[in-house]
Image (tube, rainbow, N blue to C red; front, side):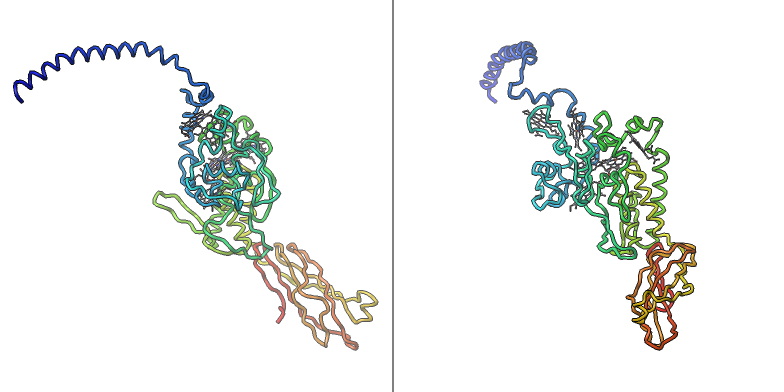
Length: 450
Ligand code: HEC
Ligand code: HEC
Ligand code: HEC
Ligand code: HEC
Ligand code: HEC
Ligand code: HEC
């Protein structure tokens, strides 16, 4: 650098320093006078209603903080929202579109959501519809017709919002006693949030129940218990809510209902594992995952599998949503796969008679047999399956003949008609019957048809 250049820089610095000071002073004074300008700022009229929500309070952020810890705010199930059959419940945006269009989750007009969202503020509230505080109104509170259970409606006030998604997608199987249920897969069950049908006492396998006291007595159902009086956006129930009715409650295990349900659930799980219908594995974190390991099963096993899945994996309230129905399903499921002793059938003394003069003329003889159940437990669906004859006598009735259920130690009559050729004065019969135990296992007695 030359001497001339150095001098030029020194000169510039001399001029710049006072200039900087002037600018700085101007800025400081501007800051002071601006502090009053900020306070005077007014939101333009067209945006004033925005401040009914967007102000410096925690109105939004307070709810956000709670929501972010909930499964609605953390779960990954929203990713399924890209598929049209899942979008209505799994994507928050898909849900709002479904409600706006008046569709059901399984409507053919449903479309997948290309950018699915979690179950966000906008899914449950009408955020940014009128751009006023009125937009906290819930997306829907209309009664919910459970779409896989025609004729069944969930009408639980604000809880209808929840039930629109937390409803079953599959109807419980129904087959004749002793029949076989097929179509079982590893993710078999009502799927996956059937809390509304549990409250109504329906969609269990093998029996229907009645709506719980919580459906009829708790105003706004789900919302009251899961969000309390403080709009708790973690959706975790609090004991304080229970206390308004169960005044002495210290936890959810009122009258030990959850303890009992847990014990019965564990017992049923072991029975299903022993029957080879359920298989359980433990992952690295020690969490046990159980899933059906059969594709078809006899009704009693299938019903027990369905009910266990419904109660333990899907409803998850351990009886709180509907204590009576939960217990009834567990009891019947356990009894159904704990088989009673084999029924023991025998034949009592037959009574032969002509049913009418016309029968006499036609040679049609009636014989009433008494079928005795010598066992200590009920014989179900008893059938007289076969009656073999001699001396040219043939059976006129159509067999098998249904006898119904016979309690242990009791007997029931069944009448069979025979064609007697003229001149025949006696004949023998050899009879056969079948009966089922309480599990639907079939047993045979006597001589069966060839
Ligand atoms: C009913 C309350 C409410 C009103 C009124 C409201 N907003 Fe919002 N706004 C929200 C909520 C809730 C969010 C979403 C917050 C979230 O999802 O994290 C949001 C988000 C936003 C966002 C962030 C970008 C986005 O869309 O998520 C902007 C910008 C916004 N609002 C602008 C406005 C303007 C402008 C108005 C008025 C014309 C307005 N809001 C009125 C509740 C409201
Ligand atoms: C748009 C559909 C939708 C609505 C509406 C909805 N949920 Fe959910 N909910 C879900 C889905 C999907 C999950 C699972 C999220 C995941 O795993 O990613 C879930 C999860 C939950 C869980 C956590 C379950 C667990 O296994 O821990 C609770 C509790 C819950 N919801 C309660 C409610 C309540 C109460 C309401 C009503 C105020 C409600 N939900 C409304 C779809 C919905
Ligand atoms: C009627 C609403 C509805 C529909 C339709 C629906 N789901 Fe779900 N699903 C839910 C709810 C609610 C949950 C959360 C249940 C809970 O945690 O209690 C859930 C949970 C799940 C889970 C998590 C289960 C778990 O135990 O972690 C998977 C996986 C899932 N759904 C897959 C699907 C798929 C795939 C589809 C489409 C083929 C679908 N769902 C359609 C309501 C629905
Ligand atoms: C799963 C559904 C659901 C989701 C998701 C949800 N809310 Fe709510 N929210 C409710 C219900 C139900 C109420 C109670 C409504 C009532 O009592 O009128 C409520 C109440 C509120 C209220 C009080 C409204 C009033 O009128 O006083 C605010 C504010 C609110 N929610 C904000 C939010 C925000 C912000 C988000 C997102 C971070 C959010 N909510 C997400 C269901 C939901
Ligand atoms: C009487 C109060 C009450 C009502 C009404 C109620 N719940 Fe529950 N819910 C509970 C309790 C208590 C639990 C069990 C919590 C526990 O044991 O940790 C539970 C469990 C659940 C779970 C499993 C949560 C988990 O973390 O595993 C979901 C999901 C759920 N309820 C959703 C609903 C929905 C949806 C409705 C309405 C259709 C509803 N609940 C109605 C009290 C209630
Ligand atoms: C609005 C009133 C009300 C609220 C709130 C309420 N319950 Fe109940 N609950 C009832 C009624 C009524 C019954 C049936 C009568 C009975 O068995 O005491 C019942 C029965 C029960 C049962 C079955 C008891 C049995 O012996 O069969 C359990 C478990 C239960 N409630 C748990 C809860 C829990 C946990 C909460 C809070 C999350 C709760 N309840 C909130 C009214 C309520």
